Image: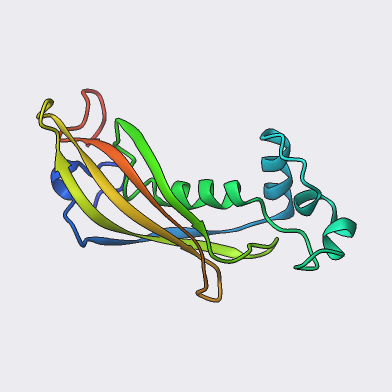
Length: 159
């Protein structure tokens, strides 16, 4: 498979040190943050109540951290896990800076390791580190994850 084909990268298309600048970026809206908080039952007033948040450390509503994590992973899907069999592990999630309504979040990833399966030769694990950053280029979050990637596309997937 062509390594430049989004959603179709297979195990042999990855190598340690490879980097991806994910596109497009996403501008976080108030609606994004509020819907995420409501869907996940995160009712912390720092994420929902402008009057409360104004009196706290940042002086305004903070975007929920799990949303930023989900956004960083989502931005990387076309390049990294569009053809994956499973996301196996999320590790080392670090929030470096706050995200606010109106911030535009981008992401880039680096392949740390590619490990073919010893028991199932049709797949392997790709370990990546993803960095999310805002419109000023400030890192807001980093994470590492392990993705189970096939060596071939399943039948019926156009390639």
